[in-house]
Image 1 (tube, rainbow, N blue to C red):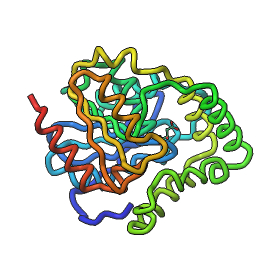
Image 2: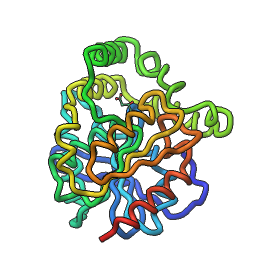
Image 3: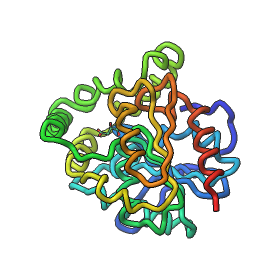
Length: 277
Ligand code: MLT
Protein backbone atom coordinates (compact mmCIF):
# COMPACT_ATOMS: atom_id res chain seq x y z
CA UNK A 1 0.00 0.00 0.00
CA UNK A 2 1.43 3.40 -0.80
CA UNK A 3 1.97 5.79 2.05
CA UNK A 4 -0.20 8.89 2.29
CA UNK A 5 2.08 10.51 4.78
CA UNK A 6 5.56 9.42 3.76
CA UNK A 7 6.58 9.33 7.44
CA UNK A 8 7.23 7.74 9.80
CA UNK A 9 9.48 5.46 7.84
CA UNK A 10 8.59 1.80 8.06
CA UNK A 11 11.55 -0.51 7.93
CA UNK A 12 11.18 -3.97 6.45
CA UNK A 13 13.75 -6.19 8.12
CA UNK A 14 14.32 -9.90 8.27
CA UNK A 15 14.62 -11.33 11.75
CA UNK A 16 16.85 -14.38 11.90
CA UNK A 17 15.55 -16.90 14.43
CA UNK A 18 18.08 -19.57 13.44
CA UNK A 19 15.69 -22.18 12.04
CA UNK A 20 13.44 -19.51 10.54
CA UNK A 21 13.59 -16.08 8.94
CA UNK A 22 10.70 -13.74 9.74
CA UNK A 23 10.08 -10.61 7.63
CA UNK A 24 9.03 -7.78 9.90
CA UNK A 25 7.68 -4.28 9.37
CA UNK A 26 8.91 -2.09 12.18
CA UNK A 27 8.44 1.62 12.89
CA UNK A 28 8.26 4.12 15.72
CA UNK A 29 9.20 4.15 19.38
CA UNK A 30 7.27 3.85 22.62
CA UNK A 31 5.01 1.16 24.04
CA UNK A 32 5.24 -1.84 21.72
CA UNK A 33 2.30 -3.08 19.63
CA UNK A 34 2.53 -6.43 17.85
CA UNK A 35 0.21 -6.47 14.80
CA UNK A 36 -0.86 -9.89 13.49
CA UNK A 37 -2.39 -10.05 10.03
CA UNK A 38 -5.39 -11.97 8.69
CA UNK A 39 -5.70 -14.66 6.03
CA UNK A 40 -4.76 -14.67 3.15
CA UNK A 41 -3.04 -11.33 3.67
CA UNK A 42 0.27 -10.19 5.10
CA UNK A 43 1.84 -7.49 7.27
CA UNK A 44 1.19 -4.85 4.59
CA UNK A 45 -2.43 -4.74 5.74
CA UNK A 46 -1.19 -2.79 8.81
CA UNK A 47 0.79 -0.13 6.92
CA UNK A 48 -1.68 2.72 7.33
CA UNK A 49 -2.41 1.81 10.96
CA UNK A 50 1.32 1.88 11.62
CA UNK A 51 1.73 5.23 9.88
CA UNK A 52 -0.96 6.64 12.13
CA UNK A 53 0.48 5.24 15.36
CA UNK A 54 4.24 5.09 14.95
CA UNK A 55 4.75 8.59 16.39
CA UNK A 56 3.80 7.20 19.79
CA UNK A 57 4.28 3.44 19.67
CA UNK A 58 6.85 0.89 18.57
CA UNK A 59 4.90 -0.98 15.88
CA UNK A 60 5.94 -4.49 14.86
CA UNK A 61 4.11 -6.41 12.12
CA UNK A 62 5.57 -9.79 11.08
CA UNK A 63 4.65 -11.85 8.05
CA UNK A 64 3.43 -15.10 9.60
CA UNK A 65 4.77 -18.42 8.23
CA UNK A 66 4.58 -18.53 4.44
CA UNK A 67 2.75 -15.18 4.06
CA UNK A 68 4.01 -12.12 2.18
CA UNK A 69 7.71 -12.54 1.53
CA UNK A 70 8.19 -15.14 4.29
CA UNK A 71 9.81 -18.34 3.02
CA UNK A 72 7.33 -20.85 1.59
CA UNK A 73 6.11 -23.39 4.14
CA UNK A 74 6.64 -27.05 3.37
CA UNK A 75 5.24 -28.66 6.48
CA UNK A 76 2.35 -28.25 8.85
CA UNK A 77 2.38 -25.83 11.76
CA UNK A 78 0.12 -25.02 14.66
CA UNK A 79 -1.15 -21.83 16.25
CA UNK A 80 1.25 -22.67 19.10
CA UNK A 81 4.15 -22.58 16.59
CA UNK A 82 3.00 -19.16 15.37
CA UNK A 83 2.71 -17.88 18.95
CA UNK A 84 6.26 -19.11 19.67
CA UNK A 85 7.50 -17.36 16.51
CA UNK A 86 6.05 -14.14 17.93
CA UNK A 87 7.70 -14.68 21.31
CA UNK A 88 11.06 -15.40 19.66
CA UNK A 89 10.69 -12.42 17.35
CA UNK A 90 10.11 -10.05 20.29
CA UNK A 91 13.12 -11.50 22.09
CA UNK A 92 15.25 -11.14 18.95
CA UNK A 93 14.25 -7.46 18.67
CA UNK A 94 15.05 -7.00 22.38
CA UNK A 95 11.46 -6.07 23.25
CA UNK A 96 11.52 -6.95 26.93
CA UNK A 97 8.36 -5.29 28.20
CA UNK A 98 4.88 -6.80 27.72
CA UNK A 99 3.31 -5.82 24.38
CA UNK A 100 -0.11 -4.82 23.12
CA UNK A 101 -1.07 -7.74 20.89
CA UNK A 102 -3.45 -6.70 18.10
CA UNK A 103 -4.68 -9.47 15.80
CA UNK A 104 -7.20 -9.47 12.99
CA UNK A 105 -9.16 -12.63 12.20
CA UNK A 106 -6.49 -15.35 11.73
CA UNK A 107 -4.13 -12.92 13.46
CA UNK A 108 -6.70 -12.82 16.26
CA UNK A 109 -6.46 -16.62 16.63
CA UNK A 110 -2.67 -16.26 16.96
CA UNK A 111 -3.15 -13.38 19.42
CA UNK A 112 -5.48 -15.52 21.58
CA UNK A 113 -3.05 -18.45 21.47
CA UNK A 114 -0.24 -16.05 22.44
CA UNK A 115 -2.37 -14.74 25.32
CA UNK A 116 -2.93 -18.30 26.54
CA UNK A 117 0.68 -19.41 26.17
CA UNK A 118 2.56 -16.24 27.19
CA UNK A 119 0.24 -14.15 29.38
CA UNK A 120 3.19 -12.41 31.03
CA UNK A 121 4.23 -11.00 27.65
CA UNK A 122 0.85 -9.33 27.04
CA UNK A 123 0.05 -5.84 28.32
CA UNK A 124 -3.23 -5.43 26.39
CA UNK A 125 -5.09 -7.42 23.79
CA UNK A 126 -6.99 -6.14 20.75
CA UNK A 127 -9.10 -8.70 18.90
CA UNK A 128 -10.41 -7.35 15.62
CA UNK A 129 -12.87 -9.08 13.28
CA UNK A 130 -12.15 -12.51 14.69
CA UNK A 131 -13.88 -15.32 16.56
CA UNK A 132 -13.12 -17.41 19.66
CA UNK A 133 -15.00 -20.60 18.83
CA UNK A 134 -13.48 -23.64 17.13
CA UNK A 135 -14.73 -24.69 13.67
CA UNK A 136 -17.76 -26.95 13.43
CA UNK A 137 -17.74 -29.92 11.04
CA UNK A 138 -19.04 -27.86 8.11
CA UNK A 139 -16.35 -25.26 8.77
CA UNK A 140 -13.63 -27.92 8.80
CA UNK A 141 -14.90 -29.40 5.53
CA UNK A 142 -14.95 -26.03 3.83
CA UNK A 143 -11.35 -25.38 4.94
CA UNK A 144 -10.24 -28.78 3.62
CA UNK A 145 -11.91 -27.93 0.31
CA UNK A 146 -10.16 -24.55 0.12
CA UNK A 147 -6.81 -26.22 0.94
CA UNK A 148 -7.27 -28.79 -1.79
CA UNK A 149 -8.50 -26.18 -4.32
CA UNK A 150 -5.50 -23.98 -3.58
CA UNK A 151 -3.10 -26.83 -4.36
CA UNK A 152 -4.90 -27.95 -7.50
CA UNK A 153 -6.39 -24.71 -8.90
CA UNK A 154 -4.21 -21.98 -7.40
CA UNK A 155 -4.82 -19.18 -4.94
CA UNK A 156 -7.07 -17.08 -7.13
CA UNK A 157 -9.66 -19.79 -7.64
CA UNK A 158 -9.43 -20.97 -4.02
CA UNK A 159 -9.50 -17.64 -2.22
CA UNK A 160 -10.61 -15.22 -4.94
CA UNK A 161 -14.24 -15.36 -3.91
CA UNK A 162 -13.20 -14.15 -0.44
CA UNK A 163 -12.45 -10.68 -1.82
CA UNK A 164 -16.11 -9.75 -2.11
CA UNK A 165 -16.67 -10.63 1.54
CA UNK A 166 -13.48 -9.09 2.93
CA UNK A 167 -14.37 -5.48 2.16
CA UNK A 168 -17.78 -3.80 2.19
CA UNK A 169 -19.73 -1.99 -0.52
CA UNK A 170 -18.68 1.39 0.89
CA UNK A 171 -15.01 0.45 0.49
CA UNK A 172 -15.56 -0.93 -3.02
CA UNK A 173 -17.21 2.35 -4.00
CA UNK A 174 -15.07 4.85 -2.10
CA UNK A 175 -11.66 3.27 -1.60
CA UNK A 176 -10.77 1.27 -4.71
CA UNK A 177 -7.09 1.45 -3.72
CA UNK A 178 -7.83 -0.64 -0.67
CA UNK A 179 -9.62 -3.22 -2.84
CA UNK A 180 -6.65 -3.33 -5.24
CA UNK A 181 -4.27 -3.73 -2.35
CA UNK A 182 -6.25 -6.58 -0.82
CA UNK A 183 -6.52 -8.29 -4.21
CA UNK A 184 -2.75 -8.06 -4.71
CA UNK A 185 -2.04 -9.50 -1.28
CA UNK A 186 -4.53 -12.28 -1.83
CA UNK A 187 -3.17 -13.22 -5.26
CA UNK A 188 0.44 -13.13 -4.10
CA UNK A 189 -0.20 -15.66 -1.34
CA UNK A 190 1.36 -18.98 -2.28
CA UNK A 191 -1.08 -21.91 -2.73
CA UNK A 192 0.81 -24.01 -0.19
CA UNK A 193 0.46 -21.19 2.37
CA UNK A 194 -3.29 -21.09 1.74
CA UNK A 195 -3.42 -24.85 2.25
CA UNK A 196 -1.26 -25.00 5.39
CA UNK A 197 -3.01 -22.04 6.98
CA UNK A 198 -6.41 -23.66 6.41
CA UNK A 199 -5.21 -26.86 8.07
CA UNK A 200 -3.76 -24.86 10.97
CA UNK A 201 -6.96 -22.88 11.47
CA UNK A 202 -9.26 -25.89 11.35
CA UNK A 203 -7.34 -27.46 14.24
CA UNK A 204 -7.60 -24.40 16.48
CA UNK A 205 -9.27 -24.80 19.88
CA UNK A 206 -12.16 -22.83 21.29
CA UNK A 207 -10.72 -19.96 23.33
CA UNK A 208 -13.90 -19.45 25.35
CA UNK A 209 -12.69 -21.88 28.02
CA UNK A 210 -9.43 -20.03 28.66
CA UNK A 211 -10.34 -16.39 28.12
CA UNK A 212 -12.05 -16.16 31.49
CA UNK A 213 -8.55 -16.34 33.02
CA UNK A 214 -7.17 -13.40 31.03
CA UNK A 215 -6.29 -10.47 33.21
CA UNK A 216 -5.13 -7.87 30.68
CA UNK A 217 -7.35 -5.13 29.26
CA UNK A 218 -8.96 -6.42 26.07
CA UNK A 219 -10.75 -4.63 23.26
CA UNK A 220 -12.97 -6.49 20.78
CA UNK A 221 -13.48 -4.64 17.48
CA UNK A 222 -16.17 -5.38 14.88
CA UNK A 223 -17.06 -3.96 11.47
CA UNK A 224 -20.78 -3.20 11.07
CA UNK A 225 -20.86 -4.88 7.63
CA UNK A 226 -18.69 -7.88 8.43
CA UNK A 227 -20.44 -11.09 7.39
CA UNK A 228 -17.41 -13.32 8.09
CA UNK A 229 -17.22 -12.38 11.79
CA UNK A 230 -20.34 -10.28 12.38
CA UNK A 231 -20.65 -7.85 15.31
CA UNK A 232 -22.64 -10.43 17.33
CA UNK A 233 -19.58 -12.72 17.32
CA UNK A 234 -17.35 -10.00 18.80
CA UNK A 235 -20.05 -8.95 21.27
CA UNK A 236 -20.23 -12.53 22.53
CA UNK A 237 -16.47 -12.55 23.02
CA UNK A 238 -16.57 -9.24 24.87
CA UNK A 239 -19.15 -10.69 27.26
CA UNK A 240 -16.91 -13.67 27.95
CA UNK A 241 -13.64 -11.79 28.53
CA UNK A 242 -13.48 -10.26 32.01
CA UNK A 243 -13.48 -6.46 32.00
CA UNK A 244 -13.16 -6.21 28.22
CA UNK A 245 -14.53 -3.50 25.93
CA UNK A 246 -16.29 -3.53 22.58
CA UNK A 247 -16.08 -1.14 19.63
CA UNK A 248 -18.05 -1.26 16.39
CA UNK A 249 -16.82 0.59 13.31
CA UNK A 250 -19.22 1.72 10.58
CA UNK A 251 -18.70 1.31 6.84
CA UNK A 252 -16.39 -1.61 7.34
CA UNK A 253 -16.60 -5.33 6.69
CA UNK A 254 -13.85 -7.81 7.67
CA UNK A 255 -10.78 -5.57 7.16
CA UNK A 256 -11.63 -2.76 9.54
CA UNK A 257 -8.03 -1.43 9.92
CA UNK A 258 -7.74 -1.07 6.13
CA UNK A 259 -11.29 0.08 5.41
CA UNK A 260 -11.49 2.66 8.22
CA UNK A 261 -7.86 3.24 9.19
CA UNK A 262 -8.30 6.58 10.96
CA UNK A 263 -11.20 5.37 13.09
CA UNK A 264 -9.46 2.09 13.86
CA UNK A 265 -6.18 3.78 14.81
CA UNK A 266 -7.98 6.34 16.94
CA UNK A 267 -9.90 3.66 18.87
CA UNK A 268 -6.71 1.67 19.34
CA UNK A 269 -4.79 4.72 20.54
CA UNK A 270 -7.51 5.73 23.04
CA UNK A 271 -7.87 2.20 24.38
CA UNK A 272 -4.15 1.69 24.84
CA UNK A 273 -3.63 5.10 26.42
CA UNK A 274 -6.55 4.72 28.84
CA UNK A 275 -5.26 1.36 29.98
CA UNK A 276 -1.59 2.22 30.43
CA UNK A 277 -0.43 1.52 33.97
C1 MLT B 1 -9.13 -14.18 8.13
O1 MLT B 1 -9.55 -13.12 7.67
O2 MLT B 1 -8.01 -14.25 8.67
C2 MLT B 1 -9.98 -15.42 7.95
O3 MLT B 1 -11.31 -15.06 7.77
C3 MLT B 1 -9.81 -16.35 9.12
C4 MLT B 1 -10.55 -17.62 8.91
O4 MLT B 1 -10.57 -18.17 7.79
O5 MLT B 1 -11.11 -18.13 9.90
